[in-house]
Length: 97
Image 1 (cartoon, rainbow, N blue to C red):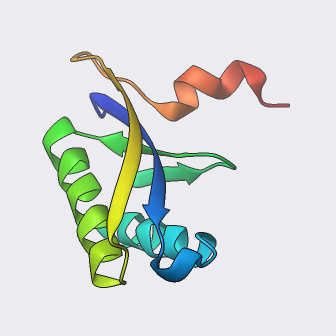
Image 2: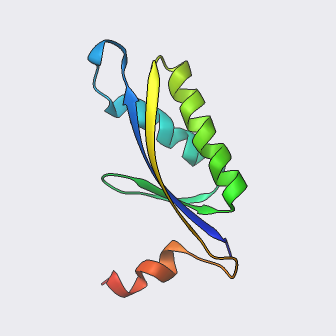
């Protein structure tokens, strides 16, 4: 079981004030290609894994956004860590119908 949950909201500064959603899609693609378990929500995406690999994904997301033409990126990150294990499913199961 993973020891870390990391939720991230990327806020890319876009070239010429363009819509940010296509750039957010670039960041989410990095997560999809990483192979970690994740869940996309309306305002943030939560990843499940080990802290070093998740922080690398955050870095990769920023790099992908720079490559896509964003001059800067702000990310809001929340981290929950438990050496005995933590999962999105266990934390949210009581809220599912």
